[in-house]
Amino acid sequence: MDIQISNLLLSLGIDSAKPNHLSDLGEAKDGLRLYMGSYHFVGELLAGLSADTQEWNDANTTAIGNFTFTMNHKLSFVDEAMPKPILQLDFETKIPWVLTDKPE
Image (tube, rainbow, N blue to C red; front, side):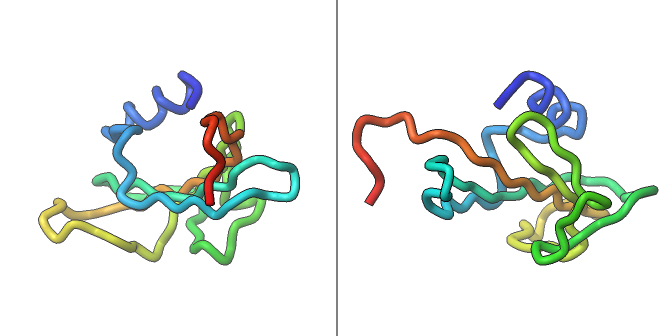
């Protein structure tokens, strides 16, 4: 993750090492691994569009490096103790597999 993304997450009070959800979706056609995940943080969306996982498009996403982000209006995996209001920042990224052992 590049410094620009780390700084963005930090500005929102998000620890980039602790997504509330992370899925490895396997190898994409280009040979990179596809990952999707999300972070929760306290706040409100004052402007712009939100989306759910099926609605991603150029109007409601932003790309930074090899990551694409969107605000999701359908919350998932929320800790009940988390203060309200809650926003969900979803992401998708493709990154190379760097370990010697290949995934099964």
